[in-house]
Length: 330
Ligand SMILES: C[S@@+](CC[C@H](N)C(=O)[O-])C[C@H]1O[C@@H](n2cnc3c(N)ncnc32)[C@H](O)[C@@H]1O
Image (cartoon, rainbow, N blue to C red; front, side, top):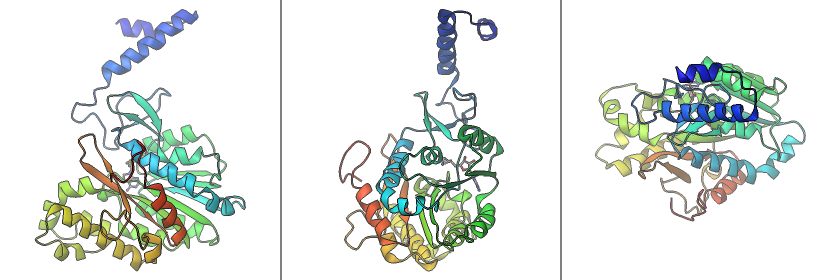
């Protein structure tokens, strides 16, 4: 009752406004319960809106590692991108965009999503942005947060289908540079066919969240059936024979190997996937950076796929130092 009367009250003075704001904060602290099972909906959103009253995705603190490497890469590659951006030819694609904002579990700290960070860039910003999400709640929230119709297209739907029209449109200007942020919850949202379509574009760099944790949780079941989510995600069933009898750590090396071979088969050359002398190949064949939860369990690795060796050189330099400034601990 007290809450209703406070919310309904018309704040007349600075003091009153401050009291209402304080109350709202206490309200959020007590209502958000991130430890409760099922506190997120099927799109990963918190049932309580964020401070701008729009939906917000509930995430762990490790999400900041992902954004750290995304932003560091976008910074480090700015001069290369500027050659295209200056001529209106740099395109950003976010296939799993979310609502544009996240809230860190149990911290009540709101932060921008990867796609919004790319949008807000000052240095060598992209000239055109494409955002997809399967949830209309998320795309509506994202549209409001971006609040620009000029150079942004936000579409609701399955990225694995929307990609067809996108690639057809983008193919009309084959000289442009493209950067795709591919950040699904797990392998179930993403089919390898989508990479095959993206790869039709010449200058197409991809930063991918390769979902180790969710593959680990489901691998046993997928091994017992055919034509599974993992077969679709990797675009092949070769992995089945190759992981027979292997221990878990070796299994992931093989899965990433298989994925690398698949990328090569769609036009990503060796030099755009790894550096000859890279010391970052924690999984054979690819310089990856792992993102771990607070219990040091690996959730996913980030992979940069490019057709150009310069992009890989930049990625290798970017992943040398982590968010806490530590070197070589991956
Ligand atoms: C990990 S979240 C995205 C986080 C976002 N990239 C960020 O930086 O905060 C994954 C998103 O993918 C969306 N999604 C799931 N399956 C999808 C699909 N097949 N096509 C497009 N979006 C999908 C979900 O609704 C969810 O918002």
